[in-house]
Image (cartoon, rainbow over all chains, first blue to last red; front, side, top):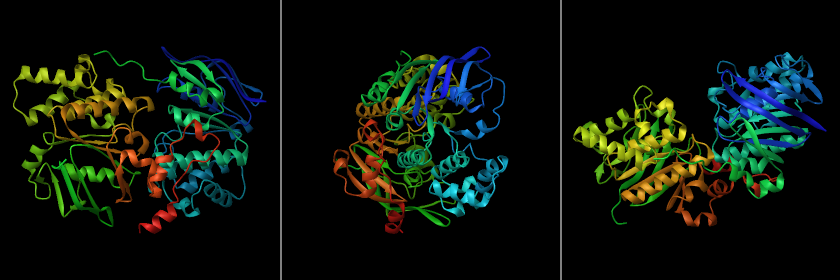
Length: 243
Length: 274
């Protein structure tokens, strides 16, 4: 079953068309990736699916139910679609302890036993329970990204949207976060939508991928194409401004 | 390689409550040396010590710390001004923060030149033009402001500023980590080409071991302020130290699909280095 289906989606910011005529679908349990340069519209597309970018045209369906533009996500959808942002330095509230950051979504959704749930959420991502009392600036970049993942996962979403989850991290910390994501995906049967500009990360993580440029999805890659490294060709260096 | 451009013996850098670089020794001849480690491993502080940029309350101490035969431990402010830029220059990590946002590219390159050399206005203009052409930009960028440049162009401008006085040693502190994957190789190739052309030594700082290994002769691996491994770049595949091995193999690829990537056993590492 396709749990994400988008057809002819267009996003316009004033003069600029950020995404035009984007269509793809993602099956349950898959890891689908968008690859492209900065500014190609891949993050905008992810924000449409997260319900953060509500001005768009076209057709979007999540879990078989159509989503309307200009309408906030309601009910179960708000729990089932979660997002991890690019920059772990910017995505956590600096004045809130980790406990407060993690407890807030649970409270909003009327969960019980919040203390225990926060503790498990931290353990799942390999942080000790005493991290809850800390503030974001007391954690390293990798630890912060773990907190961001813990926050997204604490509501047991069915779709996790990952916007460059490792591009702000060291190579060795990146390996730890990618392992964590793959382990949690198996444990909780989630579907991942990953955005990245790193061809190696895409090849490691994805079942299928799409290459975007100038707001348009240029082509799709299946696993064999990714193995052959075809997605590298499309992201090969563009000519320099001529001297 | 008898003459050492940089000589570091027993370097310690202390901050109140912690020692961020511990007893580090290395030499840099006429070659390209990579300094590799995670954030917090002290690699950037080492570079800053070589440039005299360790801010208070940081304290630098060493048995020997010299660049081009000049002793850095007893350097006067005047001596520092002559050494920086001329003898040793540095390229910083992120062009969005390191360039002055309210000055044009031309003014910023010119500033580096006038601070160090007395040259006539026409000659300055010629040299600045040559410098931007050498880093693969066209002359039109000279009148632009840093905000109007892309990340890759900004990084090229910073390299042009560092190279304008023909330094003998270039320190590049994570010159590619603010860039797209596809731009990284371009910038590193540019740095390597410039080093060869100018017969310049380079200290390249990075957290991406496989990337720098392609571009350097020797590699020095740091963990929590200490040197844990040092070897020729060609021997990395046979590295025996567990930390070097992990850094070497943790890069994801199509071949690692569906597998767990090797990661560090941090508890074990910390026992060993406490």
